[in-house]
Image 1 (cartoon, helix red, strand yellow):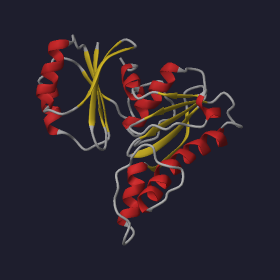
Image 2: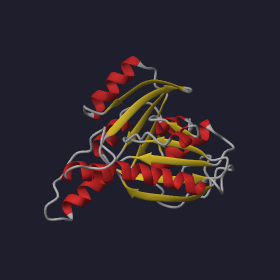
Image 3: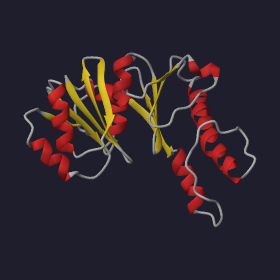
Length: 233
């Protein structure tokens, strides 16, 4: 049974997994030491695996030094099933890719992580990283329109946005949300002729209802990164 930690740009999440079974997940809302004490009291944790995209966290590191469990920090140099991992490859991308491989080995994979930024990772049947894309996420698009114009306000993304707007807010929402969806669908459709066996994994803080013709080959998995961390133990 393992404690898995995902530290992203805007939040940190933890999970407890036993084999392929996800037993518990939550956002970090308390100091690390109290969080760990509470989880250790409920679960027999054997290993701790961490993915982070932020600078060092002295509080976390100090807490980990006081724990008996071995700790693995996932980096681009960590031995794993992926090949051709470039230097500086984000630990979050690496974990999500490993989660996809664990569920669909032997297939060409497109792993899309729609968070603060949207990352696209194309992985061969042999587990080689072929290529990738990084683009701004929904909230970054809204913030960019606000910060680089004189009059456009800053809005928070909202669900149930119409395809075409009827005022400033709904027009900005439409471009950020539906424009992102069209981008995702465009990449999938452009890759399919070259990779007809393509399987798509979609994860991250933003979810999208893709067109019907793409649904059958797309798996929405909010815990994909945790599954990748789990595969390392």
